[in-house]
Amino acid sequence: RQARDADSRQLPAITTDGCRLEIGVNLNRPAQVKEALEFGAEGVGLMRTEFLFLESDHLPGEEEQLATYFSMQDALDGRELIVRLLDIGGDKQVPHLALPREDNPFLGVRGIRLLLRRPDLLEPQLRALYRAALSGRPLSILFPMISTLAEVNDLKTECERIRGELGAPRVDLGIMIEVPAAAAMADQLAAHVDFFSIGTNDLTQYVLAIDRQHPELAAQADSLHPAVLRLIRQTIDGARLHQRRIGVCGGLAGDPLGAALLAGLGVDALSMSAGDIPAVKAMLRNHSMEELQRAALRSLSCADAGEVRRIAEELA
Ligand code: PEP
Ligand code: MG
Image: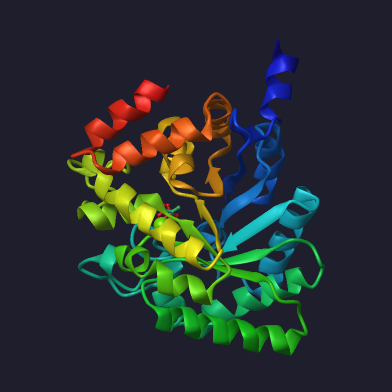
């Protein structure tokens, strides 16, 4: 029985009518890769690099970061690796960085807003990533907390400068879609990047104006809210317009009901915690894309998250 379960976890996420979704894992460190592959991950859809900074008493420099990215590539043995640039701020504070206290940290200097102000953080990370790319093994770079095209252009300029200095190959550059402004402008942003990754955790908190950690309200920050799904739909349309790859790496992707609707809405890839992979694959393998699309379409005209959940549960 155990052997059979292990085998079925390695099956691809193909719907009964033959549509395949890529299934990635969200993780922090190389030591987590082995288990993720056992759970059926096909690659790393989101490597959060905050841990390099959160679990250290010093700023990890270029060499230290490079060693980590190399071991990720070693562990992945040719599979996809999407590394997200440091997303500090909001709920993720680094004590020894001593950043100024903000009244609304989730609306403050967070993610690339911080990196664009701090070349001492951005440069070593980009240099380490482009040096890792020199190995010729898969690697893509993902920018967190993008809200404007100007930010994308500034980061791309920086990437090109560093790539040129190192003589490194081009790598795919993608952006997190987790700020409503980015979702609304997806058709324009897509022209300037290689891929999108939707962060439903932040997108939900910003769309519903609920702090994702609020002790009283966080439970209401439901990513199945039709307002969130409509922005996801809009983001997918924007990506399609320019034939860009679009994935989801927020918590919704790891919920079988959410994954079913996201597939029906038209995303190419889902990335989630390792433990969520088997149930999501099973859900997708048990339905046709036609059924998923019908449910997704209906969900867009629901009045609230509860109604959406009932539609998704009918599928399950
Ligand atoms: C998200 O916001 O959905 C996301 C994947 O990023 P994080 O949870 O790290 O903010
Ligand atoms: Mg986020």
